Image (cartoon, rainbow, N blue to C red):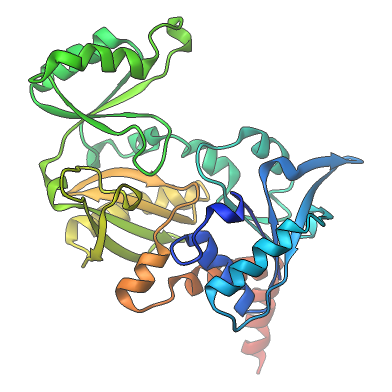
Length: 340
């Protein structure tokens, strides 16, 4: 199969830790033809969506590190293949947040011809942290405003610790803990986050959310594939931190799913599938859903290490099966088998 990855520059990724690198490596081991491109590589020629793509040609059987070195050498040669996007079988959107809406503008015209993971309309819907408001019964008390005075009133009404974060972001960037019991810098922070020097309509909406004490024992990252649990881990914040993001220094540990974890997975499953969000990571603290990560979700490398598995195999299995299903080949094979 021809599988492309629209992603960040290769030299910004760690082949041992990054989920995208693990997916690409698995494709190589299966003999798939893989291509690399970035958002600015998309263009239109004669009414067709095309892209400047680089075929990555490492042979199977090498180590992850050696495979990645070859990939980087391939890209540095700057010889790009100009391809019609519809000639691909599958396209992984693995560019870090936020969503690049120019990319979406191009890809919306080929979404019926190429299996895109995740669906572009679904990524638009889930592009901000507000997507969790689809499940008001299982999330912490949440407020969103661009008015510093309103936000201050909300924090005062909480009467203790709260979490404040931007509506768009990743890896814990901009997530801070506040309290009205420490008011000295509170107003300054609120004005900074909403960018109050701008007109009201141009300010940044900010999320204020109740602080969950259970986070001191870590949160749970649950990877989901096609509505089912792929694996889970507990992320323990490092000393002096409350953020559980691995890039903020948190430590990953094995985790056995609880009944509340499973309830949350069951609660979100139908909506995820409805929106074409096949490969996601959800974050849970206690019995509350905190975030749904659908844009380049990460964690596979840690699952592999914690459990001695290769979770990326299941992801590529799913992609292969879905590509065949869309081409009608799975149905044909099933009917053929029945006839034997």
